[in-house]
Length: 177
Image 1 (cartoon, rainbow, N blue to C red):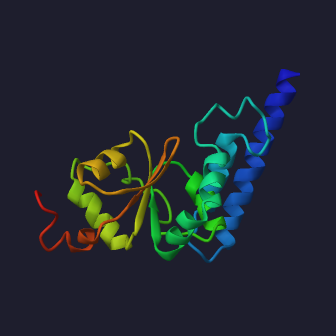
Image 2: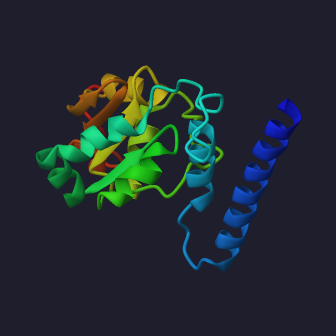
């Protein structure tokens, strides 16, 4: 029984990743379909199996609650949202009509070299209006250090508003930096 279960799980993984590979080859877009598949598999949404859903705190309900807040969503739709962390935002926010400023996590994405201004420059280059992070992440520490205003918070999901001075970081930077 256990061997059958393992074989079925491996088969589902193989089919999903083969489909994603073919989809990426055929697509003439840079949208990261592979992150959708990785997120879905890690969250257990493909098999609806409690073994695969390892109790991650970023459940679809967090995003469904965010989407239900019409005032918040209206403002998010007006700008671009930069996300950091897992691929959940990649899946749910575009479904709600929110535009993302970064299309996928780059290999150097999590290495911020202890430079908050470099983080601000990256946001200015992406023309980000909001930053979606998870609590207690290095990105949130930078946002707190730079006094970004908190726009939305639920469980561990945080959305910060990007201040006007971020676009001028290359000129003179914020006060105190």
